[in-house]
Length: 101
Image (cartoon, rainbow, N blue to C red; front, side, top):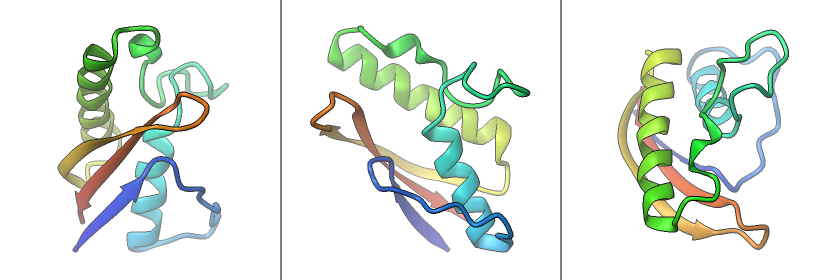
């Protein structure tokens, strides 16, 4: 089952999520969290190393980190594609991540 996740969309947390919903929620959280943001798990999320890099380099580094964090932290999801969609009004990078569960 392929699912598309857009990093700019809001996600309502379902604390009792199970199955596919839990996996999608986990992937969304991983790719929208920077390392050192979570008090008891400082290595959760993507490293903010791409901030302030030129856009082509930032996109490449962020994409690589998305693949890495999902592979490491949510092995039940397999990434099929990661696409850069553009920038939000606030300057945040927006990605579309397609996963297979």
